[in-house]
Amino acid sequence: MAFMHGKKFGWLVGAAVLAVASPARAALTLSFSEADTGGRTATATDTVGNGLIATTTPGVYDFGFTGNNFFLSGTLSTETGTIGPQTALPGFSLTTTTGGYFYSFGAGSLTITLSDTGLSLPGWGSPVIGTIAGANGGALSAISAAFSASTDNGVTYTPVDGGLSFSSVDSSFAGSITGNGANLDALQAAVTLSTGTGFFLDNTLSFSETNPVPEPASLSLLGASLAGLAFARRRRANPAGSSEN
Image (cartoon, rainbow, N blue to C red):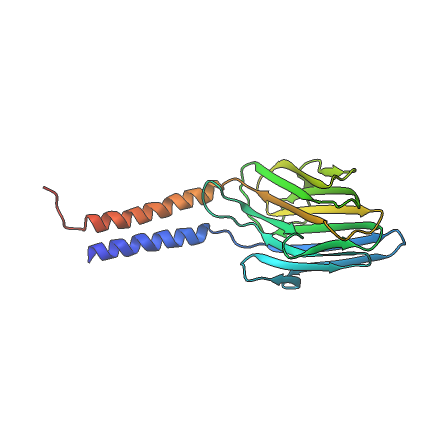
């Protein structure tokens, strides 16, 4: 009986601590702002449950934007990661390459702004990494990306770094920045794309902002959960009342 109670206690402790250690999904807001050389503008804002369509994979959403000249769709995912040395703490990743499209029928610029609020990044200073990559196809004339973070749930953002700029866009472009932050609860990326002509084929885009280091609190919780499981196994191997000669 004591063995059964010990086993149950160990599993309950392990399960409860792992549940607490799992990060909650944050709130995503995706907005588009198009300005054409002809003076036309187009805007749109999507949030989880309004414009962002949940897929069969938890934390992954489909999105789409139909402007005057720019048209794009793809997937947007929250980065919650797992507990362990390769943990990716909450952030986001947007891509037009998976079952999506990205093209323009004319000249102009498009700014894509993505914010992820309600996060809980470590209180100690830790890297925040922003990345952008894609394929040009010959028509994108300039790309800029600014990554920022906030400690007040997105009310006021501060730059993570100087940002990225491609004033001459290669056929295959990629770049990343690394900043530093503490007590962060919101991340935001603003990417502006400019073209002097229309483009249709071979144009893909992806960008993300994450914190790819393990959170000490999560690792401590993991250690506690493993200790609980070890306790259960020890009670099973050495039930109460048994003695060794």
